[in-house]
Image 1: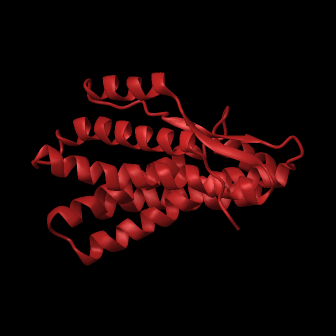
Image 2: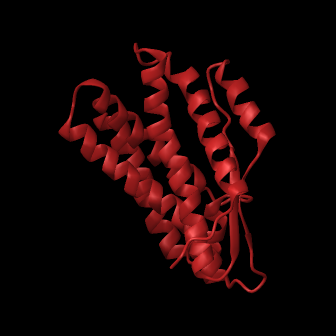
Length: 195
């Protein structure tokens, strides 16, 4: 299957990735006694991958169901993420994959929504393995923060309110929702205990 994209989408993804990485660099400088460039790399790899792959998962599954789908950044929300980072917290909603297909079923919509959190759980597991294999140095910090941010994003996106993924997954299948949320919460607890 070919993934359809555009120059606009690629530009929006790159800008959002860099802005989110910069915002988290501001926050991570408080936690990690490292050179700002190294902190930016940690942020770009952990938060950047969490964000990019989450959105691309939605896009790929939506296109599989015949929907037009492209990521669009939210410039005001990116600015808000950077500004709030200076106050010690981040409100991050960098944008979303816009999906258009008026004939999507509830199941298809549920699966499209589930794809993002599932990717975050896979990434959390990957970063956990990385952390356990290399428990010191910058790779350890990447692994540690990667587990935490991906687990947290999975749990947050599965909250069944508003436009978050969880409301669409729950509307499609309560059992799949419950199992996925249970795994996400377990991974978040593991990230806090192990790292």
